[in-house]
Image 1 (tube, rainbow, N blue to C red):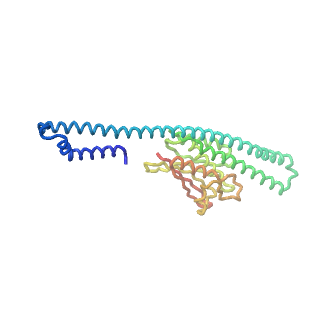
Image 2 (image 1 turned 90 degrees about the horizontal axis):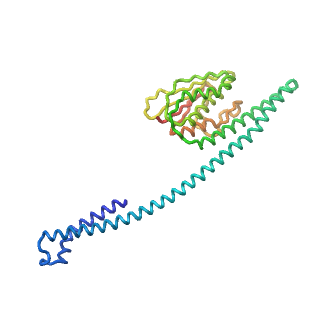
Length: 316
């Protein structure tokens, strides 16, 4: 029971008992000769009530204040400990991120060397390579690229958890345009067509939304049909919802069968392990966790060989 309610109940109880018992109490101490009239009698009752209730309230409030001070000191101590733990956590996160950067660089460096040496080897001994040896070299090169991308995506996944949600007015049109510029070489190599609809300006995290669209557009280009130019549409639904914006990234690629729809957002899950696509299987996991972090929802609509559409919502 709250202290304020306790004080009120004690005050009401004492007041009721005083009304019921005060006459008998005063008559016990004073006889008729001492009490001149009823007016004097009521003055004594009133003054006595004020004095006694004043003392009672002082005692109760004093007791409440002592407990409150103890709670404040306890909270202050907990707050100091919390700040210390936050400092330790920040240092730990910085050390972990630094380690991830170093580890990523150290792991990717030999992979770059392998890729470079394979290119040089193919150029120098091109006339002496058999079809079988060329195939082996291509497998090695593709495997090193996949491992390189997996390391890079794992680092992005790690950094995503340490990104602060700094909300601001975000122009999604600029975000998508910048991503397309970043993918310019890849888009040109695959002769991809990126269709972009008009986006609203929203209040959210620019950094996290950049990662969402980057991963979704990257996936849409990667998982295209063999010998076909990827066609990717990025847009927003004309939703009447007052709570959420709904966005989507649609492709006309290889698609995903229904059995994999629930697994597709799991970390490192790939539905085409045997293919030569360079995806690491972590992109959609990053998207899912970011959207969850932004209090939105993400889902998929896809059919094998008929393309995929990823939808996600962002609170308005």
